[in-house]
Length: 426
Picture (cartoon, rainbow, N blue to C red):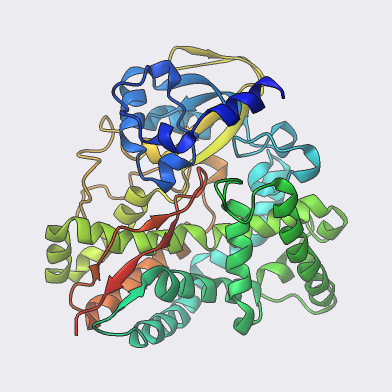
């Protein structure tokens, strides 16, 4: 057994996630442990790093050596310096795990210019303001239907009945995917983002790839049909007719990577923010009362939900050259992780960052959508879905009660909520 494998077997990562963050030697802190997020114990570890070692080197038992960047301004520096810090799959891509080449999923988020720019511009019109305006009516109709069908006075899972349902319906529209089969998109998204291990069905890259090959085969057939048809305003048709993407199926890993990017990007940020927002309002009842008294605050609350939830935990880059960041020397080829979840709680940039405040003066001051060329292309669609949903919630319900703590995803990439039991008063 090699040394990393022996070390992995020797460490109880769940127990590590519950250590007192203030008693752990700072050089031992490894915030890549997925249990920190499934157990919701990450806060103190990032507070330590921001305070004592904001650009922090660790030789991780899970991912090998890498740098953690935890302060707001340093994260922005890395995110906007693509000429120094690469996201290209050829160098490792956007996640900490060094996936073997045969399992890497190249996509425009895992590309550097000019290929990134050429592919991103093909799909960006679907979330341009004119099309968002057209989609708003559909989103509202669906939100109303979902909310009206919810039970009163009994416990149910908000994630399944509301968060997943609204976002998966939207995803089916974006892909022109069969509406009655829409939960297949949810499954593919979950498989793509969960960390392997911890008793999940996806406990190896091989098992993940089996499921994702099903997705690839499905869309390869859809692609053939859409390519023969006149261009339409759905993501597959746009890619099939795009100058830089019309031959994607001939590059299966890149085809799969772009499909996953669009499925996960069009789904996870919004669905986890829908769940998180209700949980936060229950944790801060004074904010819920403030919202009910003044529904106009939804406009400021939505970006605050996205900041406080931080749906994407981290993004990885790889140094293309030697560089200096906040006094630390980063060598060419080293991995750098931007912990958005930490930057969004940086007290040097955000006043009272650990409080959920729905009427902040600068609610859009957050890192959840990233910065620079890789800023989330669908950020306005995510905000629009949250806005419409909360407008309709306030019209028909008194405060919705979360009856137990949410269950969270075992992932250090997506800050996911997998189940949240709630009750709507009669």
